[in-house]
Image (cartoon, rainbow, N blue to C red; front, side, top):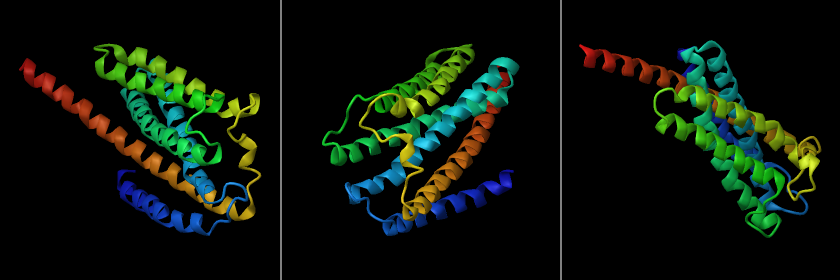
Length: 219
């Protein structure tokens, strides 16, 4: 599996390099024009954020029930990526909103719940960093709570009246927009999975190094 990491990373980077050309050639949306093209990046980031949140939550559940370090490593990697990708979502959203709605930020259900979920995974990382010995189990519970927010974030635009487009906007995309959009989603998903796997291997090395350092101190 490790031997495939460079190849998968190269494929993901090649897809990212080609994506702007596909987006450039995609048809313009009739009301928003050029600014709508942020959608390809923003919505793909959002889907990748959901993926990494699920990885962190499932890894945390596995750690709580089995106490296997491998599950904990996936949980940590997923939480870190959720925070990074979530920041991209929260930055690109206002860039789009300022042009489309005339406001950088509105506290509507989708945007607010996304921000809350992002803060939950920030709390997870802070707890892991400063919570002291035994914080792994408590932080795992926090990650589970963060994962439980994903369906709420996704369906919030359908349940409440909001400025944010509903989930039905993706199935209703024009034929010329569907190809670039799903290409961008695939690029983000592939890159996220490769980084998740690499970060998990790095966390494994860190844990093994900690064990060696403790053994050296005892010696």
